[in-house]
Length: 233
Image 1 (tube, rainbow, N blue to C red):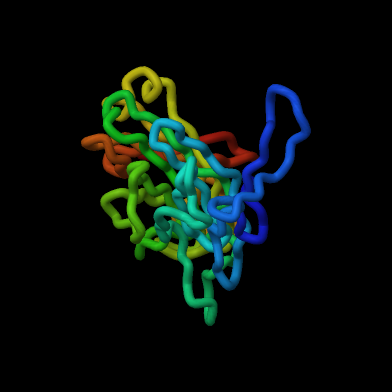
Image 2 (cartoon, one colour; image 1 turned 45 degrees about the vertical axis):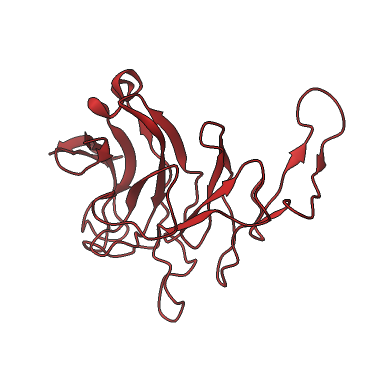
């Protein structure tokens, strides 16, 4: 379980009988994941047995990986997905900058050598991008995303601006589950680009190029609750 205080807890047993209890292991549990100043609220953790890692995000916009069997009280790697600013003007745990839903962890049938992690934020660390999806291999190292692995989910107030609205996790279409990134897509809800504040929501459908998510050839579905739905390409 990811807690609001930035700690990742392990509970056992969960199934099979017995009274569930927090694991207290001076060498491993609980794990100190987020120590940020402005927002340490963690998402639910996602366990990847194949990679031997646990993935989760925090309210300031960081994505973490944690060793599944021997975490050693800390994380393995950290990626700055959201706009984790210094706190003097914007960012740093404010609405829209954080990762509010658990990341998606999946094995791509067209690229099975490494599981893939997808993290969502309303305000990307990448300049010129507002809401965003960032794709990383499960064995990512500490660093920052780039335009090569991040796609834009729009910004109501202008290209690349932070609108203070959260973005939630998307999903894959059926083609992805059948053929992976060879012909599949990822879909997520963001903002109508420069549509004004508050902006209507917009659905984005992204293909993949060489197994990496891309905005090239993407399709946008503008959702309007009073006039139906229009399609833009």
